[in-house]
Image (cartoon, rainbow, N blue to C red; front, side):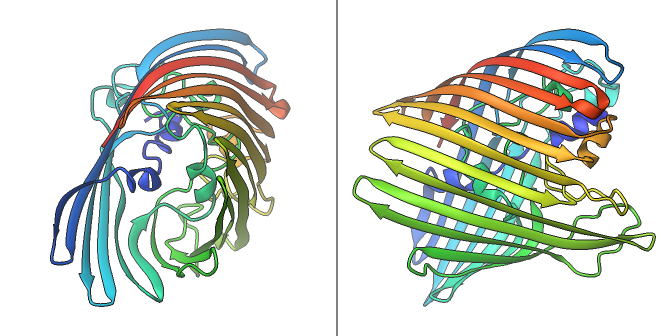
Length: 392
């Protein structure tokens, strides 16, 4: 499996729980027991034109047309719930599929080719809830930067396809604004408690399976993540604000390394206009999947932000977006064979048209730039995409 393929696989199963919660089709509802299902299929035609300079200073260009999955992979989910007096027990499982699994990689090995579809399970959990709150038991997306990515106005769109990560010819999804404004909240085994609504505030605290920073690393304590959300509404509008955090410690060959990060953001909606500003800052964490990177006593530092404006008029939604991430001494950069600091940015415009309920057409343009100055690597990537999203 190539390094490019491994990196693009990181996002082969992006979160869709919040969107599907409102699109679920109820199959059974009787005596306090419910069963429902939800699904999504999307496909895009995209054309990418890339000018790049490699670590040796050699300039080249690369143009490619694709028919592929967008930011969200196609997926199907199943939901079960049972009311037991003053307590409710629920379960969710979701299965995610890549449509971009044909022979498309310039440097793929025979093992990477074919139509495996990368069927994956990123959610398989149960919840127990009551007036006291909710406990989630199982596998779900992380809390750190979760709200940042779920609030992205390009969630149903395409986003960036940086050649730096091998995304133009990748066999999986595009990146949205991953690594250009936020990190991906990688799914983890967890035990998470969420409080009931407290005057608009809800707090989630999680104990999670730690990320191994190396094959021989020791993690004496689990990974801890938390998220505080605030929601309020006013005439013709609403405000949502959030902050999330993560902490973990590891030890490799008697060398200690701490990993920590904070994510934050605010969204204001009024009269069809939606304004979003979010950001993050981390130490010891990668800027793609938010996973830990061991670099000895020197720590990786990464920070980024995303600003967006969207306007909805009847069945039309227009989006302007700009995101940027800066990484110093990046383990993620080393993972693709390049050493040094890097700045990744993405500027985009998207138009979403609701053709019918459950059918959305998308036209999008993104310009992605990479400057890894210490290693002479640079990229200027222009991508135009046209697609459709079908949900139930």
